[in-house]
Length: 346
Image (cartoon, rainbow, N blue to C red; front, side, top):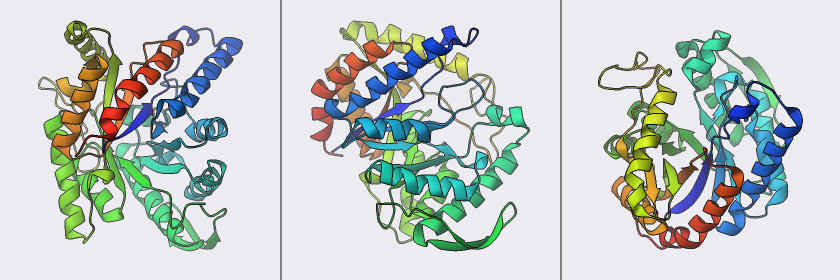
C-alpha cells in the first residue's frame, strides 16, 4: 500500500506582494483552508505543511495552520515537513507539539528540517551554526518525547529538571519525520528512529538516500520498511497525456529558475557551493514532475515508489493553479488515483 499525502508549500500570491491587500489576503487564507479540509473526503492520508519566512510563502507559522485545519477535519493526519528547528527555542517547540497533538485528537505528525540557507542568511544565521542548532534541538526533542522532565547542557541551551507540558496524546510519541537531501542526513535519521522524506532529486539519488537509511537502521538494530519512507514530487493533473511532456518541461524550467538562487542547487554547470559535510546539495531530475491523466499519474507514482521502496507519497500540486482548480484536482486524485495507490504493493 502507498499512503497518499499532500505536501503544502502555501506560496504567497504574487498579486499580494506589492499591495499587501489585507481583505484579499484573508480571502486567500479562507480559500486554502476550505481546500485543505476537502483533502479528507478525497481520501488523502494527511497534509504536511512547510515553514518558510521572509516572503517565500504564507506559512511562517505552520502550526497555526494545523490547528485551524484540525478543527475542520476528523481523520486527516496533519504535520509539518518541516518545522525549522534552528529558528525555535526547543522547549516552546516541544510544548507546541504536545498542544497540537491534543488539538488534532492524536493526528499529529512531527516533522523537522534544518532550514534553507538563503532564508537564514537574511538574519545572519550561517549554515554551520544552523546545523549545530538543529542537531541540539533534535537531541532535546528526542529526550522530551521520552520523558516529561529533562535536563540538558549544550552549546546553545542549558537547563535542569525542565518539565514540558502537555504531554502528547499519542504515546509513546507521535510519528517523527525528517526531510533530508543527503545520505549522511538519512543515516542520522535512521539512528534517531525517525521516518524519512525526500524530494528534489532524481529517482536514482532518492534510492541511494533510502538505501543509506536502510543500511544505517540495520546497523542500529532497527527494522524499517516502506512505512518509514516517503517520496515527495510535483503533481499536475491533465485531461490528456499528450500534454504531459510540455507541462513537465515548463515546470522543470520554472522550478530550476526559482531555485537557482539557492546555494544548495547542484547542476552540471554550477556545483552547489554548500555541498559540505554540514550543508548538502540537491538536484532536480526529470522525474521530479509527474503529470498526466489520473491513470498515468497513478502509474508513475507506483513505479517510483516501488523502485525506492517507499510506502508514502507526498504530492505537491501545481501551485500556479487557483484553489478552486486544486480542489477539483484533489477530488479527481482521490477518486481515480488514491484507490490504485492503496491497492499497490511496494
